Amino acid sequence: MKQDPFSGAVFMFCNSQRKLLKLIWWETNGFWIAQKTLEKGRWPWPDTVEQAKEIKLDEVIMLLKGIDFFCAYEPLKYEQFD
Image (cartoon, rainbow, N blue to C red; front, side):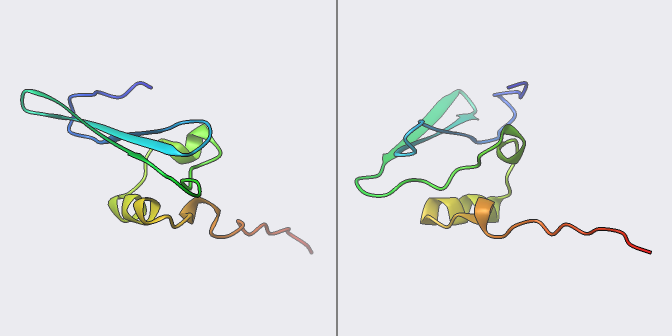
């Protein structure tokens, strides 16, 4: 991770079982850490590092509500033909 932890960005981490979610961010004079453990179900989480690099605020809101926008649809693939 080559990001600046003091940039004001929120960093999200999920354990391998996808039961535990942690958010970490810097504010003025220290770090905030928030954690939530699910009693039932799993957090939706990206399958690749590329998907996980940066997500938008509306995507974070969907993630926290349990909406798996990472797998919402399959990318379309087109083939050129003559």
